[in-house]
Image (cartoon, rainbow, N blue to C red; front, top):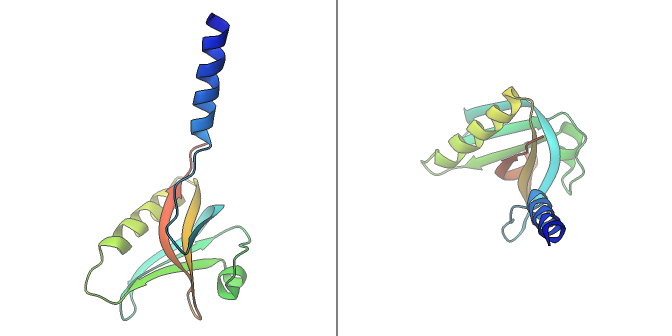
Length: 122
């Protein structure tokens, strides 16, 4: 009985480790990547740009060739760009791998649109 309990507990624990974070409609998680550079700036809207070290394989040529994604909103709010910047900068400073939540919008100068950052543990 004890062996069965340990086996079931181990299976339950291991299944939780590989759990994935849900993506919204039209969005997909890409990665894992390590972040090489993060920028937060005004460009007609609150923009954040994230560059990664690894080669990206996405439907967007700019993202693939330059290894960058961005978040831009032209409304007068910066809440989302602030938390995306914070999570990205934290992962970069700790050299942690991340998953990036991207949608299908490919901006010609900025790459795919960033919606989320998931920091992975070792």
